[in-house]
Every structure is written in C-alpha cells, then in structure tokens.
Image 1 (cartoon, rainbow, N blue to C red):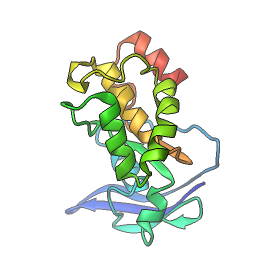
Image 2 (image 1 turned 30 degrees about the horizontal axis):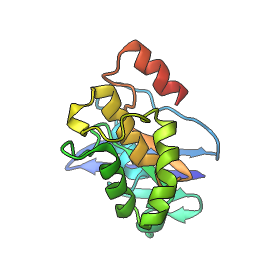
Image 3 (image 1 turned 45 degrees about the horizontal axis):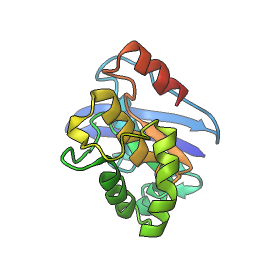
Length: 174
C-alpha cells in the first residue's frame, strides 16, 4: 500500500527527514512516534502529497506519489494537525464543499454523506455551524472530510491532540 525509499526532506540546510525507508501493507494501522521536531508531520505531509520530498521515492498503492501526485491523492484522505475547516459553514455544507473539491459529483457526495456522518458520530450535528462546535467535534468534521470520498488510505496528523480523555477513547475507536 505504501512504499517509502530513501525519503529525504530539507528545509533550507536543515534535514527534517533523512534517508527514511519503510513500507505499510493494506489494512495496517501505524502510528509515528517521536519528539517534537522529529519530522513526523513532514513525513505525513509528503505521504499526503502536500509537500514534495527533496529526494527519495513514495508509492501509494503502486502509484508514484511524486510523479503522479493527483492520482496518489485520490487514494488518500488526509487530516493535518490543524484541520482546514471553514468555520462559518454548517457541517454538511462544508462536507459537500470538500467532497466536490475531491472530485465527487453532487450525487456521490449526497450518497456518501450519511456514512461519513455516522462514522464520525456527527449525526444530529450536521446543521450546526462549525465554529459553534467544541474542539473535539471540529476534529470529527475534519475526519469526516478525510473519509468522505472513501479513500484507500487515511492519514491523520495528531488526531487526538487537544482532546479530553473520553474523546481520545472515541477517536481511537473511530
């Protein structure tokens, strides 16, 4: 599913990631653990196609993510640490917007919306303005946008940070 070879990323002269190699098989759940500044978010952004590597190769489901980023990104659902939410929108309006950005037809968005809302336990909250939601519910909205197009791979950066203990348990179950 994911194959990373000699992945390197520099920011100026600083090597954020250096010659990293790993593979992840379909169905595996993997977490990156390390100190702040260790390069975890950088690795996830490269996997999601948000950042390009300085060197190395990334394959997502057999697709070269550097040479064919759009094709690789269609297989991925990504939630960065700071969820890219339009907080003045209602939950369903935002999810419809996000689905269209991912290339889904309006009919496909409507068909998939109930599953995304159910998976993230947002039923009953779908007509609330995002800015009125708690931090934990805003995280759920971010995850819902990441899974709406039913990707093969979901990448979550710090999905439990800032959550209370009960929300952390729910996040892990989700």
